[in-house]
Image (tube, rainbow, N blue to C red):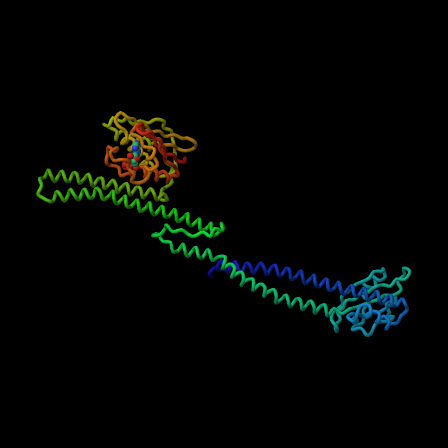
Length: 462
Ligand code: ADP
């Protein structure tokens, strides 16, 4: 079965809670009413008993007693019946014919013997329930007689039944109204959410610059709008970056392809000697190699950006750093740059060895590339503050403070004249950053223009 809508659920909860409250309140008010009505009957029975006793003491007869009751309490009390009993329980005199013979229960007799009064509710098969008061009459501390006064409870029962009937239709009506009201109110309360989801649906990848409107109430709805807007801003930035990246990538690929095309066209324009063809093919091969490098870098970069695919093996960094050292030495051969290791400590991290090797190689490669003859490149592997550090330091040309942050962006190459080698596409450091980030680490650079740079990779230990 399909789950109920939020709106229907809220309305049902609302009605359910109200039903529970009304049921409890009705039960309480019913018992309170019943109790207070019974109290009234009991009090009137006590008054009648008092009048009966006092009138009788004056020696007046039955008719006199009844007249006194009517006078003192009003005509509404004419349904009270009373009788006098002698100490043995025999009726001395009684008011008009009662609907039932008022019984003297053993309990009432025992209470009377001890001078106490008794209140009972009895069932009269003809006239319904009856309230009966039995009071002993004491003279000089001696019980001389018993007065019994009764009143029918039919009216009380009818009033209570009427009240109960009223409750039985009022409560469901109130609950039904509450359910309808709850449905309408929650509908209104949820309208901003509906409006927001409609607005959010209209935002597509093409207009990620649009934002959801806030109402300024600083409530849950505004917080939801803020959250979605932050997400949209993130998506917009990511989309813009992806667009810039593909434009830059296309540009990187187009330049060598255009050069290649130009050379081939020129070569085909007229008949050439074999040496001429060989020269064209040679230079074409260089362009193709450059294209392959760009394509490989792009592939690696997009793979490392998808950090989720990275395996989580234990990786010993020492052999990786030593391998990068060897590669650096080979690369520096004949350039007059010395590459050496400084502190090397054993460090183990979790991640992918191949990607980490690539990151360290890129840093060493750059250090050698941007260090003039006579300079030095040094590598260190340390543990500091619970993190593994790989440091690649050079005494090369350095990086301007203004460029330090952006050199990690894809396709950023500082002025081409600085580069002795046309090989780089500006993806090297971007790759380092995305590999390190995928391992939960950071990479940063300290540099003095003209005096050298120091790149530090920090990785969480295994
Ligand atoms: P590239 O493929 O051009 O080497 P990178 O992303 O590796 O691209 O580097 C970006 C730019 O940062 C380089 O063009 C270079 O100008 C600068 N750079 C990188 N490493 C160093 C370094 N060790 N010393 C001086 N400049 C550097």
